[in-house]
Image (cartoon, rainbow, N blue to C red; front, side, top):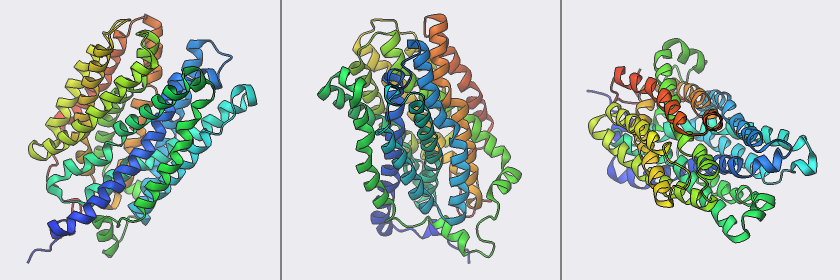
Length: 440
């Protein structure tokens, strides 16, 4: 008689209530943490150069603000390593709750920071420290919620299920652009630049409370419960085991995630700079375009995940990368004075293709590793990739724009970041249908 696994024992009736709670808990936590991350990114592009770096020239101040943003990415590998090991040792659920509290505390503190005029050099130093804490926290969130969902819900629709925590990025952008746009609408741009930029940071305290409460109500994943019940238990040194036995798949995740991160931050954070500085679009117009594009991306992530359940993870991800690269040439060919319609259309197209990438790669990542080291292996390579692909892409984009005076060079840069990821997906095995509990 063959042994049944927790995945096989899931019935429609048992899935209904617990699945909804789990999907909501994973999604709301990811959305909240990415909202915090996005508020910082947009404020770095819009006001932080004047608030924290007023002594520098406009371009240097903008680059300094973006470098502070990049600091969050630098801390992500440490956070991915820490929370990955924590999740493989004490459980996915507890690690995710801790990361949420850490992110919320850092974001709330940002809303209370003194400015350069009030505290001098101490102000940007404190901003950098809090940004590092944000990056450390999100290093565990990004993969933790993904692992929790993938291990807990039926494998047949794993692509669709794993799309829910991954909508955190675009939905966080939606909330962030909505919050910033609302503050600007109520108080005006001058007040936003002077003091009202703090409001979106302070407002996150409510969201953090809701997210933490919901996450504490969900059950631990069946895969983690399974390895706890085995004689050997969780890996004693999950990072060493991952690097020794699974380094090839960690390298695959690193390369694919690097390409995806570069495209995402060029199409989001750098887009705000491109629209407001080079294309001379009003802030409200740029934020509206980002809002509509992010909304489209949410739909495409879930649709692409469902498609990946039917035709496979690799082909969906490859289509996303190829289409995203082509869409980048469309976006970065826009000229000053581009209409609001064209601006919005370009953002919808680029972020939709990015959503296709995310929908295909998310289940693929979880299926590459065994449960004993899944959280550690994914978080370590995934978080390091965000440094290589995401940390400096807005900075490099701004530098290229300033150097050449036109954004076409940024399209070349985006293509160069995507090509290695396309090659890896072309030469890697398909993983659709793998058992996440028994996979070795």
